[in-house]
Length: 274
Length: 304
Picture 1 (cartoon, each protein chain N blue to C red):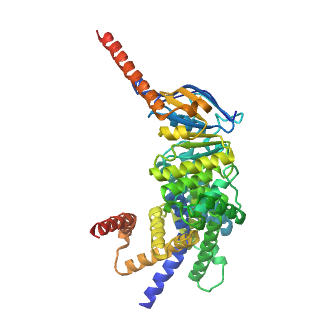
Picture 2 (picture 1 turned 30 degrees about the vertical axis):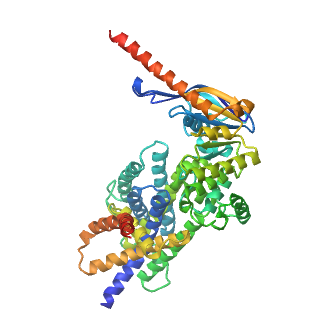
Picture 3 (picture 1 turned 60 degrees about the vertical axis):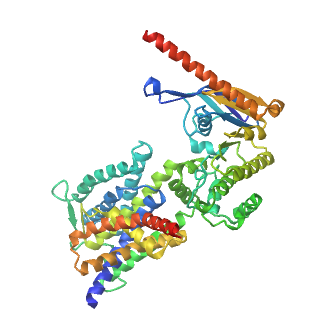
């Protein structure tokens, strides 16, 4: 078991008024095996980003535990957990330091699992490796090592961030809608690159996406979140049989359920008023 | 005429080099860490008051100067802790330390005197580090040489430090904390130590200034943040920032240019009490220049 999520609950606005409280994750448990490539879908407010942030340690859960490769990391701060995790964010600006060169960014990523000492930050033998892996991207970045990352396009930045996240093999790769901010053509390129890297290194991967087709096309397991619950979890053959229409139907069903619930609660409220 | 020029140049060089340390310090907090650190106003005076108090009481001026670096470092660390551990907003953290330092500086300046505290220390004939350096007969030349040496060393130190793994991590923290944490960087630690180093340099700047003036007083730090910022901006504008080395040298030399400009302005008849107003206007112009430039370029694009 590479990643184990045990009974996680997270509520926002706990100190606020009752009607402002929002339960993002409601007793969610999830086991992800070594080498699994899981795609996660769900509407806005379904809790998928919260789940990602809790795995990454951006904030702690109210209750429950997170294990990475058997180690309880629930209490580990975000930066300490980073040695196990590769992360790519939705916003292409989030994954890199804009005013630092490609090389400097990669040097930082190369030391993700190490202490930051007073040794000189650049290494010749690293540079060779950086050029090698940049060449594999086929974006012509291998000759632009000293250029600032801020000057790259969104797609190029996501590609570099992806390299940075996987340079030192992470135990879990977290992709938080990492192609949502890109144009369709670039998004496709970055997704294919992602798939290649994941397959090559046999990375345990979690990818959030808004795109049903991508969720079905990539990965060996699909999870659907709704109102902080896992309501659908398929893998292997069962996943391959699914079509985007099946998923859309599921979404529609959920919405109808919600509307019924709203009507019911309204009725209850009216009854109270009477 | 020649005398006036020499006078301006002398001022620009000996004040400029000493304030170059201040500019480097503020460069670290404001430019690298993206932290508008008002501790500077207090730690500059702290360095001056500390060194003056020690020399006044007969301490070795070299030792006193070295120790002023340490006390500045501690002041910066306190601001860093207030911000990262107690979650006080950055601007407020600096203001708190600066305010506390005002009292501490008064206490320091009262050491060895009849009262418990004082608002100034006059060194009179006490020997400062500059009196021990006899390269030239004229003291003002020795001051320039020593300050030049110190700023050179400090610039080299900064170049080395920010090229190390630690320094890279610190710069990444200032640019993108989320990314830094995702790369395993302890961002709180970087902010705390960064502010420590920044204020250590600023305190040293105050210590050199006090010894140049043979005095320290509780208001010597007023406006230092703005002077430092102005120096950085002037340096960047004139000498550029093509590479990191180029950038820090520009910053270190910016204050010399800055004092050259001020010196000329005063000689052209600017009243010295208007200086602070001039600082403020200068900062506004330079800080808004990029936006004005952008807007201007947009207009041009529309026309074409």
